[in-house]
Length: 119
Image (cartoon, rainbow, N blue to C red):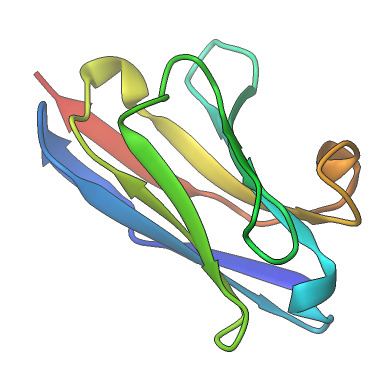
């Protein structure tokens, strides 16, 4: 199973970005999906997760109300819409796929995409 993230880049504080993660080599609709991030010198942080059919979503406290996770099972893609970005959102963002939300961190991981928010 391969996960390829895209959509990262440099954006000013208050701006928006939309990340995408395309999954290949597996049955996308069978996976719960999630986004994590890791800033330099910091531990990996949970951002958001979505269940197999998109009915349930969860967010980390630091992004709640600003980020929205969604998925398109026909396109094997999960998205992360990020708004009202802050410099502290600067990190490498990773997409993950797992058999359930509870075990998402034990599943497959992408290579990550860099998001940099300037003040």
